[in-house]
Image 1 (cartoon, rainbow, N blue to C red):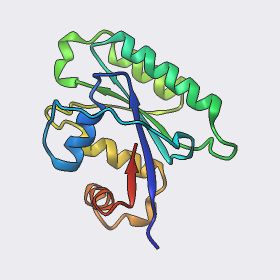
Image 2 (image 1 turned 90 degrees about the horizontal axis):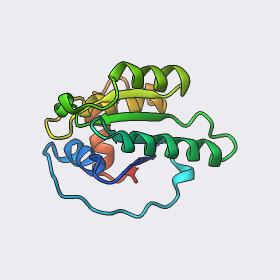
Image 3 (image 1 turned 180 degrees about the horizontal axis):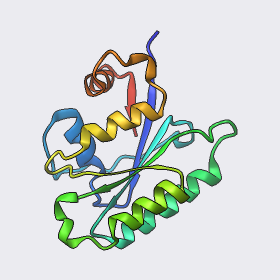
Image 4 (image 1 turned 120 degrees about the vertical axis):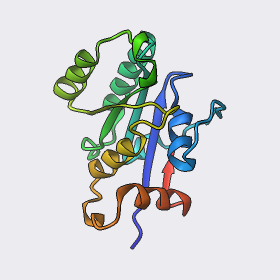
Length: 162
């Protein structure tokens, strides 16, 4: 039986949501983006909340989105994983919040996963989706490399990224 996963990638405008997904799917950086209307966010299997490490407001936006997710979760979905992603790691010198502070808040207080990446340079993109697969319980597929398994699922429409 084929397992289908729905993943919502959310964040403020310009933080790199589309770039992260594009880098994962096609292994290339794209500055073009598409404004996608999301439906069915309450029935997803995982959330990826993206912020720009150089933009304080984008992190505040992630805080708001996370709170809305928690307040509107359907009964029985409290285990739906949320991974917070600090994108644009290549612009480290422009960071507005120390990494340790964000990591501590996200992991210890929010009990969410946390990773920093750079869609532009493909840093930690595969790691992000690998961790995501682990968090949604894809343990029975351990014999196949996570990236290959996940990319194949996306290309065969077994997984939807919203």
